[in-house]
Image 1: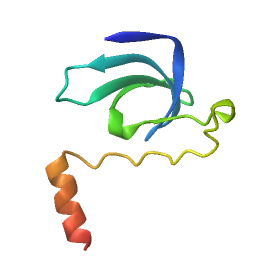
Image 2 (image 1 turned 135 degrees about the vertical axis):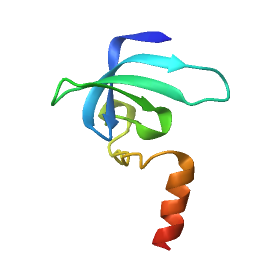
Image 3 (image 1 turned 120 degrees about the horizontal axis):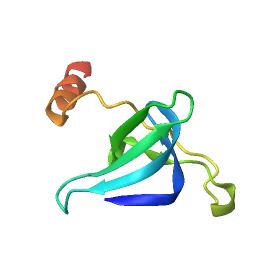
Length: 85
């Protein structure tokens, strides 16, 4: 577990926020970001695939594609993708 100081600005499926904590359960699992959502004050934990670093002009990151909300466990996401085809 790592506490960020200062917190990192992130884009999440719940909106923009600041990541205060990074949780790493090991090499075969996703990283988890604990983010304080700016608009609502809610605290959510997102897997690495569900968050994006915010725009940063200084670093040349001028456009960021927002993450898509998770639709459940991987098996259900695969089943819903097949159903859409």
